Length: 289
Image (cartoon, rainbow, N blue to C red):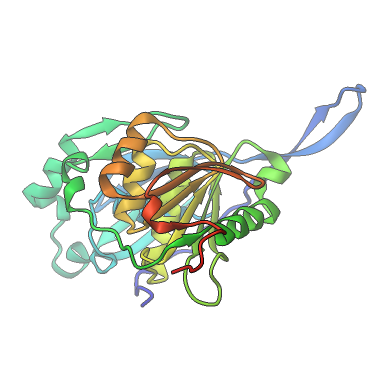
């Protein structure tokens, strides 16, 4: 079920127009991707500043808190308020709204902030708390297999999807696709941002806002599958990960440990299946799940 969070709708244009000089010496108008600082406050405590396109700031903030496990359920959030004049997003917990007590008054939340790992890649991400230590607790569904036919459908739909990348470049895109029912292979959510960390967090936030589970979903990214990306998708309950790019060694090791089905180098009709072959059916297989 969708959440009852009090939330702003402060999306801003993802591109801006500038003048550039082309190879013929001509002045031309072009679109470039936006980049805006957004400082996240949770119960009045400043956590970090994200650099973002600004297209889905509320979902980005919620998804970031979710993927850092600072929030375990959307019911813990009362309000999300974005103010671009102050370049900030203020998230208020249900606890603070109802009792006047900040969530930071609990030892558990404070301890998570003390343990921080900076992750690799463009737009460096962070992992708070003991995410790496609790991987054994993650249980992913085996109820929905991915067929080669659906994989090709996802790749084709993402390629044809209208995107900021086609207009301006300089962004990463992530998509959440269906892997069940009549709309199997269809794009349900599509998010672009200046960093793939932001895009996956925004999808995590959208999933909570719309009451969506990850069991029967496929996660697609134009970027590489690093350890952080794999961990975040696992926490979102998504068992199938697809990348147009490749993966890192730790991303591969974590996917193996969690029995995630992970495919990379997915372009045209080419792909590489790295892990989780038990969930993948080729076109030669007689039946699909």
